Image 1 (cartoon, rainbow over the protein chains, first blue to last red):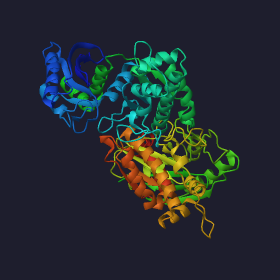
Image 2 (image 1 turned 90 degrees about the vertical axis):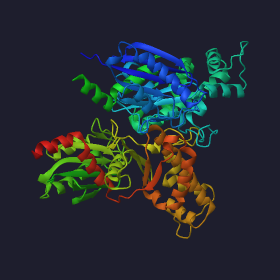
Image 3 (image 1 turned 180 degrees about the vertical axis):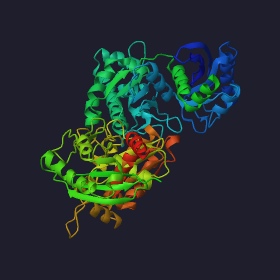
Image 4 (image 1 turned 60 degrees about the horizontal axis):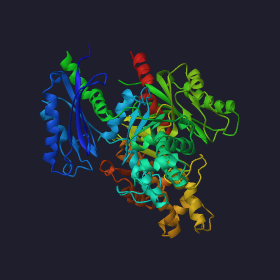
Length: 320
Length: 320
């Protein structure tokens, strides 16, 4: 009988979601608060407290053995701190110790949100059954995570798989991160829209100038819109091929708003991948859309807690 | 008492070296043959036979428990085959089964030469004590390997860490691999020399137009030679930063002929690394020259054999 549960926290710039999750990934209880992202650090922590308070009063809480946190990055898993770009009140904020205190000393596992999404896709989504995978979120930004040798590879600080900020165009446009030609600088939703507008695409009567609107124009055959998605696909292909060449993945799973564009992204992406993934050991690399939904962050945070050695030890010890 | 030995084979386009190596990495017996690289596959295998024959008649051979092979790539560790670019007679050649047969059924571990060099640097060189490292060889080509979480990460086929063929310039010059703007296409010795010549540098009275000659000119202040090394350094920095951002390494170790250029490479490389390794979790990344010498291939092949689970199991079983 596996009746143990884990608590999961999905911390983003817009909302803080929490859940109690069983070892098959089913969500048995939920709580949510908006993120007071522009407030001071203690006010943001107050929202986390409120989410956890709802969970700890659940009749299921006594069965909870560990807490998994997936947070907007950067995070520092080894230090137990987070510094989310969009939450300025949290810089090196000791989230792990604060959560552990509220959770009565349970083990706490912290990973970046790209790593959490990857854990979810490997557990229940398109990366299931793949021992070596890259999972990505392509939306306002570009994030990701890695499965290597059948295991989540968060890296020492929990940020591994950060494909959005590898440079595929070393002389390219400056990226807000400080480098040039990063995958995100070319392939994120805002950059797809920016490039289409700069090249002469104009929004329709509704004034929608988002990447989703560019995707609709591309589906309708607008050549500038098509070209902007092709350029994004080329950058994604170069980044995915680089990852495969470095660590031997056999699938890249892509989620996030831009991935919902469908063929206008995936057709040129698969074509460009043949141009960049050339060595024999990466030629069988495939690309698939993500299949976990809006709960991916929670499910992934739960998966990270279930997989972590410390949590597993605790679950086993307490289960005896 | 650990008295067991492993046999190591270092297979390149020029020579095939073999050794018996103890568990502290000391070479106790050696053999070597030139590689008949342009001959048919069986003739090349004959040279391997000759090297192994010298080792198997050694009085130390009965203590040998496993064989490690580091080979010019691509290799396929899962299939046990090799297809070295510079040895056309070997395509999907079943090297592992052939060596196992000669070695009386001992377990055989196969990795690419970049992975072998990495194992050597982690065991005895500049990557010692680092749990997450990229080791590279920058010479005629650019190869590499990874240490992740304290362990060699060969990848399923034994080719992981192949940094020479990640694209850092997606619109760049075509690379012989089929992609564009690969690190090797910009940073290898022949490409450093080619670019210097194209930009107006001329060899001295000795007619030496190698990267080593360009390095000497750069040390003497020749601006075209300096610029060619700076461009190579920029490409290496972009590739190293990409690797760190993807898998969280904290050191990049660089060996090979081009690394012997010293400051004309390492000073601009360290500068460029600050431009490309921008995220908080990669800012402490350092770069160091390799410290293992000409035996790195043999020592690394031995390390791969000692580390492999199958070999370890065999050693333990036979040691009982």
